Length: 497
Image 1 (cartoon, one colour):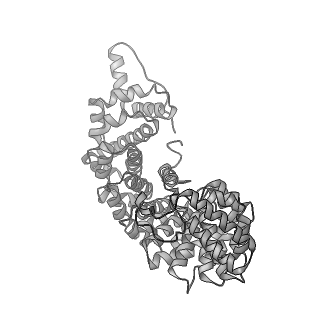
Image 2 (spheres, one colour; image 1 turned 30 degrees about the vertical axis):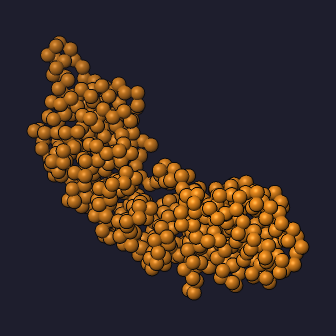
């Protein structure tokens, strides 16, 4: 992206760290319904489970019972299958598929007239959907989506919740399964189950399912996004559990990722003050998601950015900049850089809370990913600020680390730092006139030599910035030096970019 393309930067998709987090924690997107709680993840917790050969033998015997197709024996057999699929050391999911039981289970899942049978079958399907990609598609190849969608509208809440859990597991597999579910209009059915009278358990399953449907590259049409937004707002207003809050802010992040008019719709719900408060939540997932939401809102119009400021967003983001989490600091710096690209008054508010000093600390010794975002902060602030605030820049210590920053090996970081140099030289010239301490510092330090060398950099943006800095501020010095040696070197024309 060209340095001058946009001061405000919207994350078009999830940050790389977020994508990595999803890959590493995919088990959070898919959950088995266990027959009893597991208190420990070590092998001793499963010491009561039978050996694999015994489990396989039991499954084979159960298969015969299911084929007899009597209600009593089928119910007993389904309960046994559910128990077998809940084992942790050896789960016979693939064996069940190979025995041809998927169509049998789906048949029972569609029998609304026998709700107890339906419930047990749905439980079994939920655990199959928690398996591998191939195992998930063994369900989809037998029209599982349509059957589960119908069951998700069951008059029996337990069955409805179980069907939605199974759909959530399917949605948690990949972008293809999500697109198939959205194409079959599963989302409205799930949203319809979140309402007055729904149990907390059902609401959790529904919200978790919606979160999975919104993951990855999924794209919700505006009407669907607005329906989802209503659910999210109600959950965040009530804040009944950490799990619900966590999924709700994830959903809100995905609803907002396209930016544009969706930012306005979110602001219209009056939810921004709640998001600002949750940005300081003890749960890191909630905190980072909310900071990312604030960053997306501040990537919009200046008036939209102001809603974040009015809700106390600057103080919340300032605190996040000092978090022990690298990812939190990175996202906070990104959001602040968007505020810094706003109006002069908004920039002044950042200066007044010493954001430049925090940016100095980040640029001096933080993780590289955080430094890039902090570089955008100082570049944007110095571009939009009134010239009189150049004294704040000088007092922040940023000039003392400028030589190190100008030696950056990363072209993106270096380009943003050079824009910062252009900005402070211009502001200093306006405020100080001929006696310019910024120009003097650069000329007397190693900065001038570094900038001279950057005129020959392979990156076009970088060498154009370097030429601009020399020609706007130091060209006369070079002319005088060359006149003294009998040579005249005026240099090339100034680039305007």
